[in-house]
Amino acid sequence: MSRRANDIRKQIAKRRKLNYSSRENSFFQEPAVFRDEDGIEKSVYESVPDESIHPLWNRNLFLLKILCSAALVLLVAIIFKSPSPAFEQVRSSVKASMEKEFQFAAVSNWYEGKFGKPLALLPEKNTENPVHSSEQVDYAVPVSGKVLAQFSDDGRGIILETGTGAEVKTMTGGIVVFAGNKADIGHTVIIQHPDQSESWYGKLDAISVKPREKVEAGKIIGTVSSGKEGKVGEFYFAIKQENEFIDPIQVMNFE
Image (cartoon, rainbow, N blue to C red; front, side):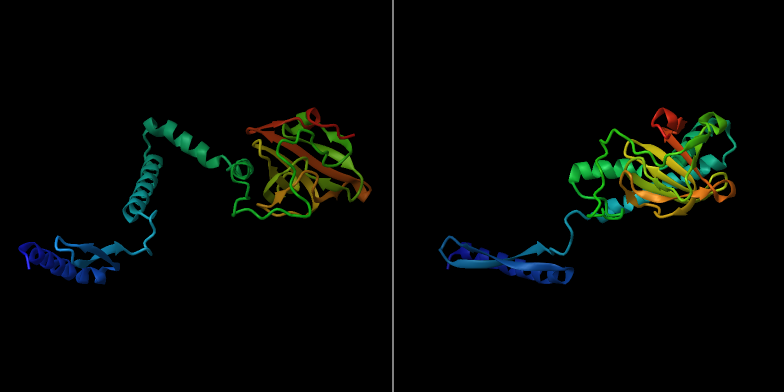
């Protein structure tokens, strides 16, 4: 037997020892076959990483992100605790970012346009009543009635006198971001729309939607509250666009 064959045998024996110890470290052994210079088939075990390890998972990067997040939180805390006026602009920017409401409707609309599926954190669409496209231009009138209080009275919305028990409908599709009681306008529903606007429906007697629910244009969300002596109904309506309220009468005709 040639010297070359002996060298190959020694290399095979050495690899077998190394691969035997690597089995204890979650590696799977697959044989590799080759021929030496004398034409003799030889098999060598080569180690292959365990497929149970996710190719996208990077433990070190994950820990680095956690460390950076903790450092950022600590830095913000130090800035807010410091009385130095030099940090005042930073404190104002952080406060403005935290107080700004997350645009669920805009993100959901973008995601569905990009991938064609609703976000998992939102309720699924009602297949019997599909949500209208965000490109809808005409707004549905929530409820018809006589204007009792103008926009100029409180700078936010208007108050309508309606029929008793009148049903209130959404002006366009969006996501419910609030459904509960507000001190000044009673039972209220706030809906966020894909164009980053909001519609407020106040003075409701009953609410039939819940927060984070996706609604279509014209969906019934409740009924108006009782007005004077229960003979009429009262309804509060407001539209908010980019943190500023606009007069609803400039958008639609209620009477």
